[in-house]
Length: 78
Image 1 (cartoon, rainbow, N blue to C red):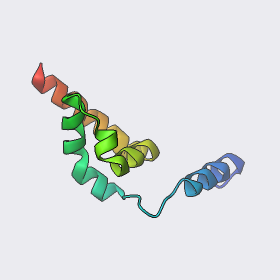
Image 2 (spheres, rainbow, N blue to C red):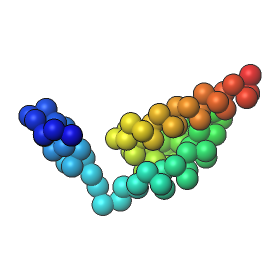
Image 3 (spheres, rainbow, N blue to C red):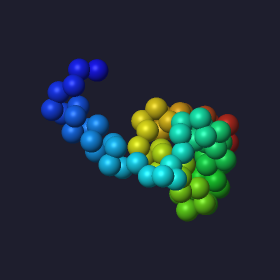
Image 4 (cartoon, helix red, strand yellow):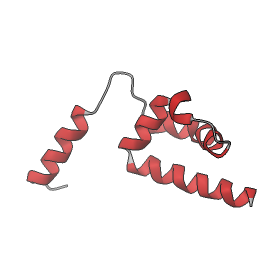
């Protein structure tokens, strides 16, 4: 990645959003199934699993995995 003004701003923003309690992609991925099932049941996974919710807000790759899983589960229910 070439470092230009926009990339630098994005990097600074991402670093400023980190917290000591946050989880990484591996841990998030391990919890996606439970998070998605809660979402489909109409529960609030964001309240029950705030670190997963926070990670999904910050990480586009994990968010895409979550959305794909959620769509697949919805298809299975239909």
